[in-house]
Amino acid sequence: MTRTPSAVARALERIGRLDPALNAFIEVWPDEALAREPAARQLPLRGLPFAVKGSAGIRSYAARRLIAAGGVPVGATSVPGPGTVWQTWGRGAHGRTVNPWRADRTPGGSSAGSAVAVAAGMVELATGSDGAGSVRIPAAWCGVFGLKTTNGLLPSPDRSGLAAAGVLARSAAGAERYLRQVLPPLTGLATPVPPLTDLPTRLPLPTPLPVVFSPDLGYAEVDPEVAGVVRAAVDRLVAAGVVRLVERDCALLDPGRAWQAIRGGSPTDPEAVAVRRANDERLDDLFAAAPLLLTPTTPNRPHGHEGPGELYSTALTWAFNVSGHPAASLPAGFTGDGCPVGLHLVAARGADLPLLGMARAVESALPAAKEPPVGG
Image (cartoon, rainbow, N blue to C red; front, side, top):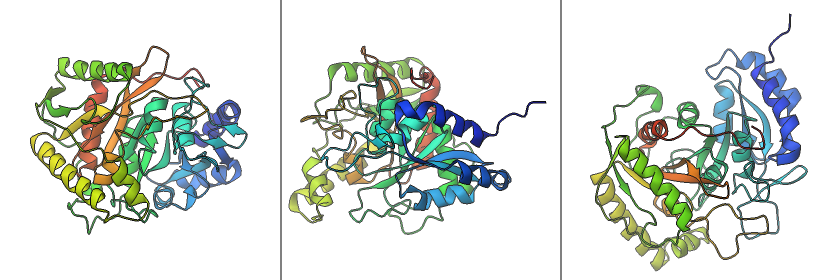
């Protein structure tokens, strides 16, 4: 009688078969993972294989919580290598990390390998961190789900306060599985949030969901084809009765220079303070009118491995690292050259679980995520 391979064994087999072409991993831990699996099966995650971002990822708070809940780490994923000022790529054990949809394009970053590993089905979820879009950008460009949690919700080594823990998964349901296991008791937040383990499995949502749609947040230059894919996804949601558009202006101030000042150790820089205050006020007004903001995740499609040039892939994501709001990216469709496009969902601070509930509703009305050519 042939024994069915375990979940960890299947993940390791797929990594061994696919990763030489994708370079999503810098390290793989087959012996440790297989040894850990039997005991892990008795815990809530039942031996779920997952990957961690970068060589230090196994020591992260989220990884420790997942292991304690019965997750099994199978390896560390690629992040940008040294000597580059741009972070939208990764370097695996054998070379540059490639986008599973188009090998001549970058997967985005800095959670590059995590997004590729999930997109290619090597693991069901992978940890990430997001200081300017480092979870959401690769999620968008690899056609998977990516969540940046509310800043301060989970411990982060980033002293600037811009970076927040996140996860790459096949769907919002996978991200919710992660979130319910990693959250500690929530105290000391500006917006009080009850422990997710004390909340019902499903939160009631208004139907249709009131949403504000902004194609550019009032300042970004968005590739017309990317904008068109996202607008078509929003129109589909409206036609399906999942959302209704609320007429509310969402013209934010460009947070680029403010982000750079804060990252550079000058959070009291006058421009940074002014941008933060103005955008916070505008976002407070927006979320008083609707629980969800929709935008494109990136203003551009995946670029080549030579680099992004003068383009800022972060143009639509880093506003919410400065403001601290939870945000997610889910697949919206494809450009004509076969590149995935992400739909960006943003909710009020602390509304991480409601955000995932709204994301599940949105996912249900959009075409199911496809399998990429590499790893399908």
